[in-house]
Amino acid sequence: MRAAGDATEIGFHYSASFPEVLGAAGCSLLVSTYQAGQLVAIGVHDGRPTLSFRRFDQAMGIAVGPDRVAIGGKGQVWSLRDHSELAPAIEPAGRYDRCWLPRTSVVTGSIQCHEVAWGTTAAGDPDLWVVNTLFSCLAGLDSSYSFVPRWRPPFISGLAAQDRCHLNGVAMRDGAPAFVTVMAQTDEPAGWRAARNDSGAVLDVASGEPVTTGLAMPHSPRWQDGNLFVLNSGLGRLERVDPATGQRDAVAAVPGYARGLALHGGLAFVGLSKIRETAIFGGAPIAAYHDRLVCGVGVIELATGTTVATLQFDAGVTEIFDVQVVPGARCPTLAGDDEVWLLPA
Image (tube, rainbow, N blue to C red; front, side, top):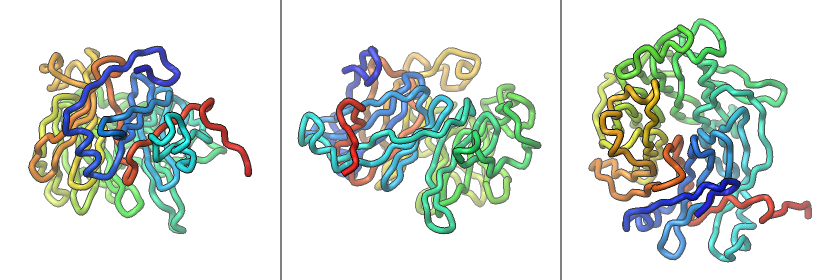
């Protein structure tokens, strides 16, 4: 199959259990492919996975809200609105039950926006948080500015476009940021690049203090039901963290550079990437197994650490950045602009 707006041929295969697991969990997935520049909606129809693509240059963080999806891209953050009332009529008619269409974007410039996450304001309104990696901070968006700084680690002395610590992920709790991941606690320009294999940390946003340290290129912290999880990406592991002691327990090892994590119904949906042989990825511990790494999504049962389903890309996609669950959706689509026209009643 071909991705939207791209001549690249996309090939994939999946375990026999993958559509069954998605169906039993009552959800579908949104996946971003940074290198291929695509947002992918993954659902199930007639017992088989369906993939719908929409092109966003350097697609990275995804935030799923009740009526909208935000996605960080190259120099801007896009907002897609839910128009699921149109989904049943999109060809082939009757296949889809959810649909999002791009409506607006905020131009931020190349801030290296990694994750984005929905929170809530004091008034209960949706509030988007942006992981601004270039400026080593968490930020909000305002159409009058490139971004609005909201929080930065205490060891970052000031705002500067220097990617000092490679702040790359955020875990939300009760509508506000609770934890972030950094690749190193450094205030030097690009200082995180000096030592990446044991310098990563999860920080507590309220105190600014490290919760756990010694990680290899961590990503995607997540908080669920009193538990903190993180991807120890350079080692290819999903880990559970005790916030009180900093102790980490391995939940599962995965056959890829782990980046992108969604938790739902006792399952962890983990993004898996092959790695580029560059100065950044080539030195990661998992690089020793580079010829065995895969790209796709692994589904892990949290209680046992067992991988219960997989979807793997064979061609056209080599890196995943984010994975998010869409509860209650069976088969979503990211329809093209020439397929759906929105007009006032």
